[in-house]
Length: 382
Image (tube, rainbow, N blue to C red):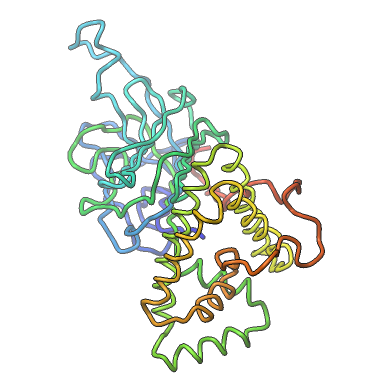
């Protein structure tokens, strides 16, 4: 589950973070927009920018989602360069938002929308669209990375670029914080035009755990209460449980990366399973969730094999053993978090409730759910 950690509206020149996380902007040589551009800032100076200092809520991003409203000025040839070099002037890159040594969203020197993250190997890696952003027009752009490997760009709600091999997670924002409309390091890559309302979302492990518990346990919390009482007797509290959830999520990301490496068919099936499971959790439908868990096990068996999967099971057991959880207690925690598919199956559980195999199911449960809406603000640019 993602958490909104920065939301600027720029209405009447305000750079206050209305997300409640305190990631306010510091405007530098920018001018509040007026008239049709109200709810934006104009970037027109070589030193223009809005700076956001580093903060705890910008650490351990893991997965991100960025939404921005922008209007860019046209690209003009640099008359100081030779004619053949004018369109290749790298200084004409225009930054939209960049987290220091973490992520970057920008328009390149020919106006194409581009996004990169510092990947698991410490290299900047990303994707580029084919020119969907036009000058002198308002656009809503969106960048998302799921924390595993899937990265996507949207312009005005339409996917313009996507790839599934940009391995995350997205790193913490470094000591120079976030720069909007320029480079964090210096007065370079300055944007030319207007930047309006923007949002930044990150993965929230605590919210993920609590939402899973609320969805999975429903009104019957007796099993979870009994488990927690047993764990408290061993000196294991909620802080330890959150630590297990963080470490376990890393194992889960590694597993999903391995499944995506099996090909596009496995990637599409995985995305459908994840989307359907989220809907089942929101509706507290344990029966439907169980169907998707069995579907996940079938995908694991067909994509990487049960033998290869054992390494992930072993990692989960190691994490649990570090705080003294027995195998049965670890399995109880996974069940409480609706992560039953991580528990080694006992016998043939492909159809334990007599329902038909879900592998061929389609319909709305297979539609990837659209994230939270981008709220419109009065007086902001359309």
